[in-house]
Length: 332
Figure 1 (tube, one colour):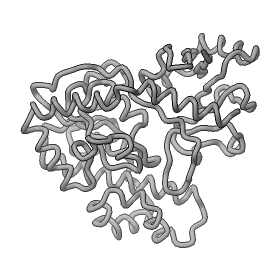
Figure 2 (tube, rainbow, N blue to C red):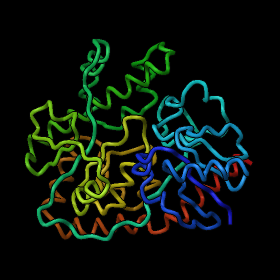
Figure 3 (cartoon, rainbow, N blue to C red):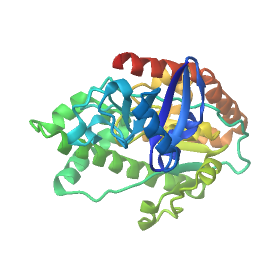
Figure 4 (cartoon, rainbow, N blue to C red):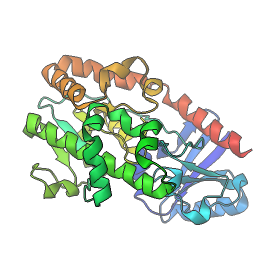
C-alpha cells in the first residue's frame, strides 16, 4: 500500500477536489486528506520525514524534489503555472488546450455518485462566471467568426482554426487570453438564446450575470447548497474556458451531486462518455435546444439517462488508480 497525501493550506480547494479528496483506498494507494490550515502542518512533517508522496495543490507548499511528490496546479493548463516554477519536472495540471500539448494531466473521476430522482419541477441549471468586456481586436475577431463558432462549438478547440486567426502571433499568453475571451462570448450567446426560449426553466447562477437582464441568482459557495441545486436537474456544462476536457472540477461535481449533466463536445468526449456520448453531448445551439426539450418533455427518459451516467462511472476507483499509476511512474 502506497501512502499519498494531499497538502494545501486553504480550505476552498476542497470544493474543487470533490469526493476524490475523501480519505480512502484506490487499489494500491491510500489517499489521505491533509488539507486545511491545521492538517497541513502534519503534511509538512510527512514531507520532511519523506513518508509517502504528496500532492501539493497550487505549489503551496512547493515541492521541488520529485521524489517527494507532485505540484498539482488546479487553475487549468501549464500556462497558469507561475514562470518561476514552470521548469519543475513534477508539475501536473487539470486541463489541456489547443496551444499546449501537455502529457502531465492529472485526470480525476467522479466517485460516490449520489443516487437520486429527477425533480418534479425539472429545471435547467447553469452555474458560471461571465466577463465579456473586451478590446477592439477581441471584439472584431468574435464578430468575424461568431456564426461559425455558434454552428460548431468544437471549432474553438481546433488547432487549425487558431493557426488561421492567430496568424504569426507567437505570444502564447495573448493567444490564450483571446481563446478564453471567445469562449466567454460563446457562453454568453448560448445563455442569451436559452433564456429567450426556456425563460424561468433556466436557473442561471453567478454574480457576474446580475448585470444582464436574465433574472439570475447570486453565486453560492456553500457546497451542500450547490449540490442540492444540481441534484435531479438538467445541468448544463459548456466546458472550461481554460481548455477542452470532459472531466474537470465542475463537471465532476455535477455528476457526483446526482445532476443530469449535458455537455458541449470536448476533445476526449467519446473516450469518457462511451456509449452514452450521443445522448448527453451537443455541438451547436440547435442540438442543445433539441436535447433540452427532449429531457424536459420526458422525465422517464431523463431518469433512465441519469442512471446511465452513474453506471458509466461505476469503475471510477480503478480509473483513479490508473491515473495515480501514470503520475508516479512518470516520477520514478
